[in-house]
Length: 63
Image (cartoon, rainbow, N blue to C red):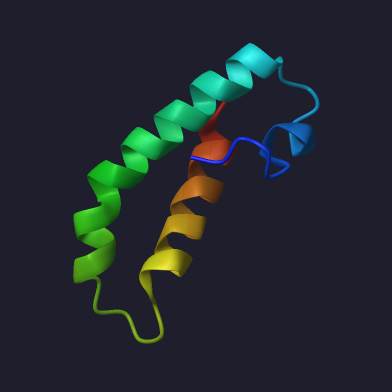
């Protein structure tokens, strides 16, 4: 996983440690949801889009 992609910089209100923990949680959730992403039948929904949506939801739900 690439931690130098600007993800933590975008979350300036969050400490780097908390950001890394969130990143790990997102990766775990993404892996868990990967099967669902692959099985989705919604038109024009590919895995990358599914993962982006998942990450957006997790960011929204994070404190």
